[in-house]
Amino acid sequence: MSLDVSAKSSSFCLRTCLLIGTSVVATMDARGQGVPAFAELPLPGGANAASVTQLGKIAAYDDGAMLYSFSAHTRKWSGIAKSASATLRQANDWFLLVDGTRYSAYSAIHGTWRSVTLSTSAVVLNPASQRNDSIVLVQDGATIHAYSGFTGQWVSRSFGATATFAVQRHAALAADGTTLWGIGAFDMVWRSQSMATTATRVVADSFGGYAEAGGSVYGYSAQTRTFASASLPPGGLTVSESGDVAIWYAAPQALAWSALRGNFSTLTVGTGAAIVESSRQVGLIALAGTTHFYSAALGTWTSVTVPVSATRILDSTTALVVDVSSVHAYSAWTGTVTSLPQTVTQPQVTRAVAAAVSSGGMPWIYSAITGLWYPAPTGALSQPALLSVHGGLVRTSTGFAAFSSRTGTFTPFVTSNGVPFSDPATAILGIIEPNRLSVFEERGARWHSTSVQNAPVPSTWRLVLINADGNKLQGFGAQNGILEQQIIPASTLPVALRASSEVATAQHAKGVWGYSSLPDVLTAAQYPEFRRIFLTGNPLPLYVSAPANSAVVSLVGARATNPLATPFGNLHIDLASLVVGPVLPVSASGTAAVELATPSVPSLRGIDLAWQGFVVPNGPAPAYLTRAAATLLR
Image (cartoon, rainbow, N blue to C red):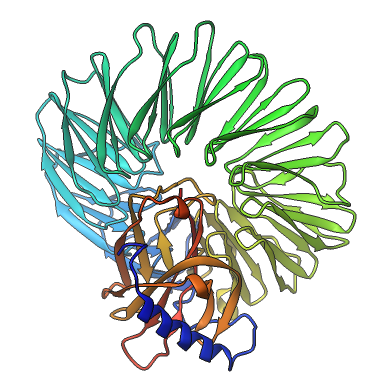
């Protein structure tokens, strides 16, 4: 499917259907009949806390002879038999069970197990410390068996005896003689490029990697699915690499690599002592008088005049440079530097926001999405802002105000006794009151609240919140934007809550509840809630979870300011921009996947898209609209 495909007749029919249906439903929080966010794994013999493991999108329970896994995408538990001697390895998007010569991998996206039989000498190449990889490589003699948690499939290829391998996050590289091979987690196709000589260093991270060979460097991007090469600056090199960016510097030349764009960019920066740093999608070189920023998202350099002694703080797409009389914020999303001509204290930086306190005592917040600074609203107190990865909270005379990096606005929350909770490493902001739990939806710049019987003690991490209140479990996902709850029997009241990125669990005496914070429709793009940035002009994977053997009409358009209530659930897409995509058949495991061809046109860059599915079940169950995903494309 292409985003510029004309589907006028289909779009008109669906718009008409939705509008007619809307006339018979009150404008309230209309809900469809989708797969519940909570699912229980009964364990009649009793649940042991030590047997529960979870990471990324997967929760698991080791019951001795069986391993049960919960997928945050399918919202289902599934089991696989194992022996007592089996070894387990978990990452964000896959689970690997090694049982003798059987290597079984579980996909967080598809909720299925796929097995291959290897020899007793097979070895996993991913370092044990890398728990965020979506690709796993297993070497068995001359053959590399690669598995992706996104495709849910194994692929195999043979290499020479002296080949060198590197794998991390969503890409893997192999240097085999004078041939460089690259593979990405989203399509799992090995591609090759010739090098002038053999590689001396091979690096993989995030969306790509590179190999240094002689005086050249060769890069592979798993997003563009292409190779590029460049000459390294001559002389003694200073190198900084992190995520999608790498920088090589030897005065007076600098070279930068973008794994997102699959290209290199050079800059003459001068001579002298230099500071070279990088963080995921942003890099910098600081010399006397000038700091040069590099954006992996844009593939461009931007310079600002500041003393080399200034304080520099980087995180993902945001960088701050603080000197005596001003603070300069750089956005790798916009490629711009915006200065605040004030003396500031207590500077903070997270993925898509930054904050500082002015000399007058008032907090300011910066959005890397808009590239602008924003003063705290009238009534704000002289206290530092509390940041999440893409938002913030400031205290006011009437309670709090929450900041959205997408809109650059503050949304008030009135309370006399509310206690805030936040974490600069998570996308969750909220307020706890004795009889109310409230969370802030950054993408819609609105608050969601629910009444509680007991003072909330939620567990949060990354993109998920879970709370227990009497006979109810409550959950919220930053990518989902919905505060959901599950009524549970008295016999399943939880004794332990645990949040992990996109999944959470509530363990009780005789089982485990799994909770998914994800929408039913999921794109591979995560920014700003999490790290993954997708650029227009490249294939964008789309994943759907729905009842087995149903059909899903894919929908996309500009995200509506306010959801439209319909009999099928809330529509989060602005009707005027709604485009109907292909009808996707759902597998027996309850998933469907498609790659969308996104055109490289300026009008799409930075647009806040909403994605939903119109699900038609295979049976008497009513049709419904899925939970919505929101995607910023660059």
